[in-house]
Length: 162
Image (cartoon, rainbow, N blue to C red):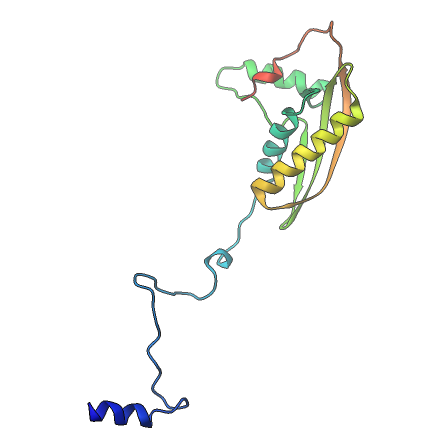
């Protein structure tokens, strides 16, 4: 025990011998730094477009997404066996490393306030995209391409997209 006490007295803070570090059992530190900062995550434009498309369709007053031509082609494509409905129809995203900008083309129901629907779509899309991707949404441009009149027949059942 005397040898151990003598050794402790001769060890100074600048000596080569280091004090034992406390380690958590089973945790090995490798590579250094926070694991969340080791690597890069990229998000494709199509991912953001799908999130935005679904979020926009959830807003009351939005009848459909896309222009008349894209909805017509989409309706044909949806009827082809093995085809799937395009949830990103009417949505264009430009995705950077930290930010994204979106352009949406919508058809609104007759009788609703277009300004209110556009405001609600913008809020819902921004909340969904930012929550799911972590990207900052810098702008959401909305183009209202048509109004669905009550007596018009549906080209396709938009409500059954899921």
